[in-house]
Image 1 (tube, one colour):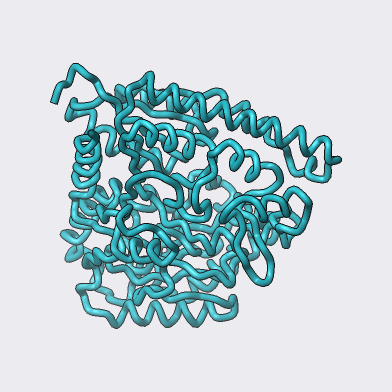
Image 2 (tube, helix red, strand yellow):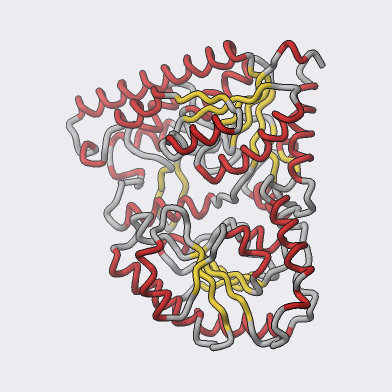
Amino acid sequence: MNVVSRKKILFVPFDYASLREHLIVAENIKNDALYDVVFLLYRPQVITDEVKANLGRNGFKYIDVSIAKKLESDVPKYSQIISPRLIVIKDLLVLWFKALQIRAKARSMINELNVYCLVLCGDRVPGWETALVKAINNKKRASIIIQYAVFSSSGMVGYNYARMSNGGYPYRASSSLINMLAHKIVPNVSRRHLGENVLISNYVTPLAYYFSGLMPKNPWLQGGGYAKKMLVEGREVLKYYLSEGMEPEKMIVTGKPSSDKLYQDFLNYNSKLSKRNEDKDSLRVLFPLPQLWEHNSFEWDKHCREIEFMLECLTRDKKVELILSLHPKMSKENYLEMAEKYDCTFAKGSIYEEIPRCDLFVSIYSSTLTSALALGKKCVAIYYVYYYTDTVGVFDGAMNVKRVDQKQDFPGVMSEAIDEVRSSNSERNKFDPEWSVVDGKSTDRIIECIYREIENIG
């Protein structure tokens, strides 16, 4: 290949979690020296001095799309949704014009950078994702999604339903004239849930992006847009997306980049199992604390009551060592008193570093379950909290997941799960590639797919 041409691969992370996956792939591509790597930063979660400094230290160029910040500030807030019709029309025109700006900027970016492959974490969010996919497709070049988490469309509709039911943003299609117009005009913008038509986004957003040509085919589905390929972590995840309407030819099972370190951590931990305490009843339970308050789902007092109830249930068995994992947006100081009260310890590393070392994984409905299942861990999924009630998702058929649908069932389900782990054989820590391919070769497979797509460009 002619290295002098310096074809570009443009990575477009959505948040810090997807950035982490992208960086693993980008580092290997940079070392191959066949293509230049550029990052596009367009969301506040990744437009930070820390992220920029880290990219610079690792020798990556990046583009900070400042127009995205202005666009976000121009999107009307909830307080404006009851505005008079003339203001609604103005808001629609403003957002439509901003969407056209993004579309034009994306087109010139693809051309000026000589981008031959676009790497995203999804193609369903209207704006930069859909504009870049449209631009790269017009050039008949490669666009690839690296699936970094499992998004449940029923979870999203349940989330929006809960928000509209609790007095939040009005995602009900019948709540305003502008929402009704979006429901009637924009394909797949609404879904039926518990007798209501629920919108994926509201007010002028669907119409503005639809009229600018930037709405995806199915905004409820992670790969519901027009990217050419989507690399998924396991066969069960692929089956789930097929059931949601994803085209089979779009998906390839590769595993995800971070699973390579998970694989090595798992092997290292298993090699030390013989040195562990011989007490077979002693179990390590890993529990990522739900972000009910951090997501503005509950008030702080209600959030604390729910967390304390869960901690009390999880620590009833005195031979359980409970490890708490915190999301980066959670402050450890807020939970020190709870941890001390229930004799818990905090995870020292990321949740993915802790999963290989646990015997039982307990979480609200979360895509981190795929990693636990891939390592053969017994899992308990808490569905009763907030918007997960009445939702159906990818893990519903998983044999190794015990689902908690009602709050009063949690103590009993936990007791059953603990008993099952204790009665299982000593080989419970073994790979299950159906959920996530964990073999230390996922990054290699992903890069092979990227290179193949570029080479197939006519």
